[in-house]
Length: 241
Image 1 (cartoon, rainbow, N blue to C red):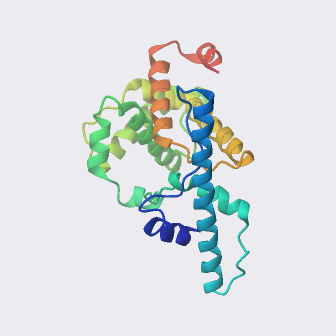
Image 2: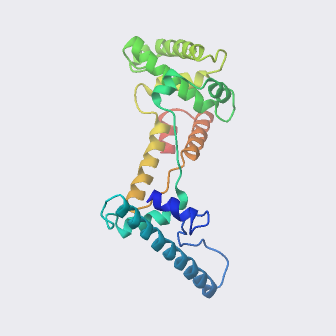
Image 3: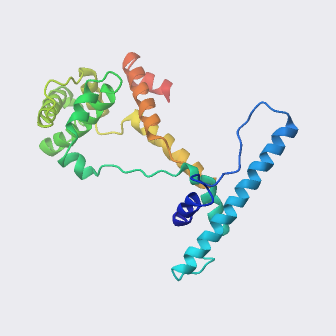
C-alpha cells in the first residue's frame, strides 16, 4: 500500500496524498455544506479506486494474489494516508552508551523542562542505586533519610559521569523519588493509563492516528508543577485522581 501511495502521489495526486473525504464543521447553510461534503466524498472515492488498482497491480507484479489486501483495509489506509509519519528514535542502548550531552545540558537548565529532566536523571539514578544497594530508594520506611542521602549522592555522580556538573536537582524531586518507595510514579502511571485507554479506543474504532507524545510530556510537566506547588501526600493525590 505504501508503494501504491508513492506512485499515486507522483502521478494522479500531483504531490498530494489521497483525500480522506471528510470536511470540518464550518459556518454554512445545510445545503451548501452537504453539497461540499458530497464533492469531497466523491474525490476521496475516486482516489481510493486509483490506489486500489495500483495495489492490485503491485501485488500481481510480485507474484501475490491481486485481491490479497482487502478493500476495507485499502480504504482505511487511504483515509489515514495524510497522517502517515516516519518516526525514528534512539535505541535505549544508545541512550545509555552514547548520551546526547548537549541536549541533556540544555534541558536540565531550561525552566520549562527542568522538572521532567530531573525525573529522567533520577530514574537513571534509581537504577544505579538499586544495583549498588540491592533495594529501591525509600523501599523500607526505617531507611528513608539514609536513602535520600544515598540517592542524592548517586544522582550527583550520574550527572558528573554525563558531563553535567553543577546541574541542579531540587531536594523536592529527590525526596519525592524516595517517597514513591519502589511503586509506580503516580503522575506517570496516570499518564500511561490515559494513553493506553486512548489506544484501546483507537483499536476498537479502527482509527490509526498517532498519539502525540510531546503534548503528553508537556501535560506531565504541568502536573508535576502543580504537584510541587500544592499540598503533598495522599490527600492531594486523592483529589487529583
